[in-house]
Length: 316
Image 1 (cartoon, helix red, strand yellow):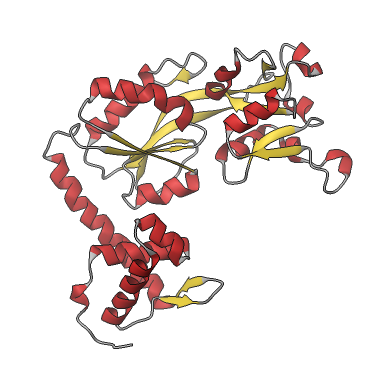
Image 2 (cartoon, rainbow, N blue to C red):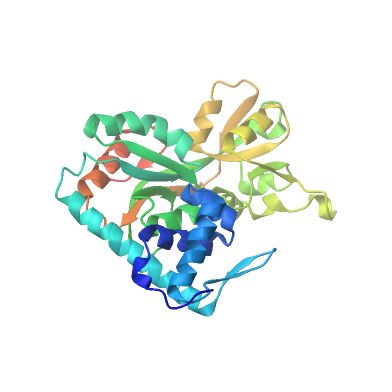
């Protein structure tokens, strides 16, 4: 390695690369996130190390880890990227705030049910503001919002992050979906405890909605009859997959009401409410406090309030 080259030759692209490697701890995944080939990213990172005269990453076949100096360099790189984004945002603020695209993120259990109605209402209010949509888990959207990769995100509360503003938009109750032939379908309302002896279909780990369901019904993830390995809770990749499994009689599930309405015309399933207090979630819009386009945020919030979801309680 040749040390002592002029570090002023570093670029913002190289800084983005090392931040991606630090976040992913994998060169291939970092390259995919940066939309470049792995050799391109690896060469750029190696060149930056040579320019700085330090080793940023310890590389092995099993893992990538930051060196102590690498941690400090990556922290500074994040600050530099944030400042460079702020320069662009200041320039954008001098233009029409509704003219530029808005990078909007949404968690998987909100996007498919809200966005189809939201997009046309945003278009009515801001016809020149294109929405660049990204769906993901909350823990993936959080750093992307913080690092200026997204402008705003739709998430379930609580969502606490330094420098981030949140605006609660609506409260959404949860419903129980059962096969029509299931004995519990004969009841008008169902208590969470009634599900503890049932086969409950859940989303996989990483989904905040899974955590919210288990908070309302802790016993829904327990093993059957105390027999190890015999799990009564099955996992699906999406709410739609789970809904179809309930239709085929595999088990029961809990859905946010916006997802449950799709089952109203399915004769194979029955929707039932919970007994009071009814579990639910608060959906909010989150954005950086430094984001210089408040009118764009207002347009999104107004569009959400205009969406006709009769089962939710809108916040004013």
